[in-house]
Image (cartoon, rainbow, N blue to C red; front, side, top):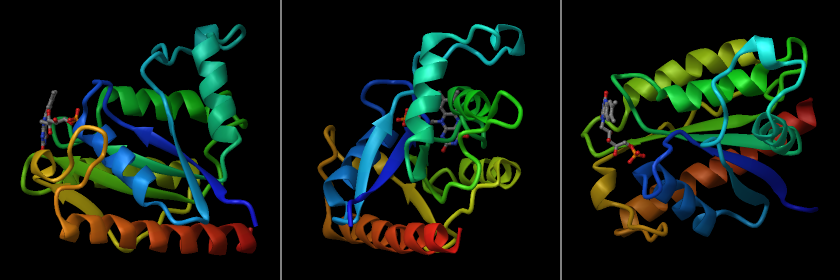
Length: 186
Ligand code: FNR
């Protein structure tokens, strides 16, 4: 069976983001049943319903990329105990036009990361609130709050210790099972 296509949405816009490093680490650790691909959100104009009649090309490309994927993993930092505006905007762009959301029904997972000790717990759970409305079945366990991320993953996604590698690997294995179960049940 071909690997399931997973759109990885990184919530930070900066080039050497810790969350991008985590996404890259997950790409290196993915099981054979998954194919992770980062979907860029940097060029998405702020959502404005007035321009839906002739949507910007980056909106169109983003929507097509997510639509073509079997599943989604969000890797989010925390801004003021919530998700960054850029990630919320990407979610909003993908959710419209009304009735044509690209998120609907896709199995997903949430990974949050911060240099802080609590691993962006607040962002992780604010994101989950959106997922309810988007009708995305989300993996519940294991939860992934990566605290102290600046010391755990290097530029390019090299993981600094075995414990973090095992944690990410376990998450990906559980996620692969979740994707299969959700798609088969669908
Ligand atoms: C932050 N940061 C932060 N960290 C955290 O753990 N909880 C928070 O609420 C916030 N709030 C916050 C707001 C804003 C506007 C910024 C720019 C930053 C710090 C944040 O974790 C740190 O900048 C990370 O490096 C951001 O993630 P990326 O870009 O490295 O993935």
